[in-house]
Amino acid sequence: MSGSPPSPAWVVAALYQFLPLPDPAALREELLALATRLGLCGTLIVAPEGINGTVAGSREAVSELHAFLRAAGFGGLEYKESLSPEQPFKRLKVRLKKEIVTLGVPVKPLAQVGHYLDPQEWNALLSDPDVLVIDTRNRYEVRAGTFQGAVNPELDSFREFPAWVEEHLGGQRERRVAMFCTGGIRCEKSTSLLRQMGFQDVYHLRGGILRYLEDIPPQQSRWEGECFVFDGRVTVGHGLEPGESEMCQSCGWPLTPEETRHPHFERGVSCEHCHAHTTERQKASFRDRQRLYDAAAED
Image: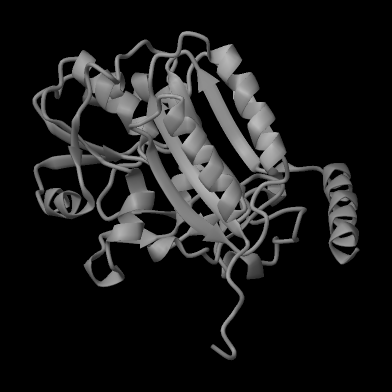
């Protein structure tokens, strides 16, 4: 139709599955060769417990990767696609790690996990005042948006979550607890952790915030703000449309349009959250870096 914007060129696929792998190093090499040939960008993490990652590429490339993973035994992938008008990652990384998401405490997400709730069921649970709803993401992610009434543990790293649970929930094992994260993977481990600690009534949002924003229309939504994503879009909103936030390249905070108008905001250099914590020498270095980025963008 005349006047319609062109379709976004980049398909973004977020995926994970817990699956014991006999030779994760060999799978890592296969994935690196395949993703390189397909021209994908983003990150894939392979570990003895499974696979996790977010990658982007053409429609054909992402479909071929998805088909390869299914053929390799990942028939139960938690898999979501969205679109980006620009390349969302600078390069490709395929990493071999001990865990596909680092909790630092041994848990059994395949054998001991919470009750999964689909987005509509999640809305019903949020209406129960006796349920403790916990956002398991890091503080800078929560900054961009969260569910109404959710507890923010103020985490700098997911590894801090077990200690937070012990300190704040250790004597409340009878509580009904519901947890959520970006795509669902952190909650696979956080719910397993709570079950291991003796909590019985534990729930988590299947597919995470991304599936919720994809499935629930804005008029029925209990979500406030935007969802931080680990790519060049910074945030997404309902329908997984790219959000309005911009990342501070100095400290990593997602900034609203209003925050980019703050006197301490200088693109690539500082924002109101970090301006006082960097020296003038550091700011000068950041300005030089930003000039290089701007020059490259103009070429």
